Length: 299
Image (cartoon, rainbow, N blue to C red; front, side, top):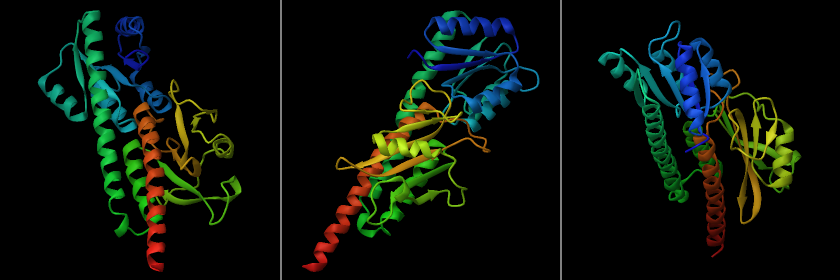
């Protein structure tokens, strides 16, 4: 459970210092803020697994910060600290998506137990979300014979994927008919949402995927990496679609920009990898179905 990233926000410097020290000693990556208005911008720039924040703070209080954090990253786990919370605060916090509460004053053991319990429930939520996302894809695989064709199915999958990972733009890059898998032959066959502007992903990223047949992740500063772990500021993803050992296209996803969403969190990145694999399987099934129908027409 170590290495999870935790953001601590409290207007009391002593509380922030103590929490960060305790969490780091337990193996977590912890960052503290005493100025709550600076927290939303940080959440847009980096991903955190858990937000630990006081309810009563000047300027932006804990409930407002909870709401903002969930808008930026719906998957973030939030634990609220309070010394004199009311039942109304607790009800509002639960409605806004808080996963845990910590009463002041608290012992280090209480802090660690609350954080670990909240993160464990986050794992259950992640597994449930993955199942909920994959079920529609399994249904799609079962309705090939009544579909509107390959592009129709892919667009359905992209819509599911966009909702699941909170992407601002997601696209399927496919070679032109009879074209080789080369950069100049790739076109965006399907894009979700339809009215999105052109991709902001660097051309270098596409070239790298084509050269390596491996996923490429784009950081907020434009840097490319082949490892999604340990990077809190991934804003772009390019994943090769492999069918029978051959790359047939690329799935791209983007976030951030002028939207209110932050970088992709680890749950979104994991889901994206799973969905890319499912997309490749569905494309292969569509091709097999079309081949079967062609053969049947000649018999």
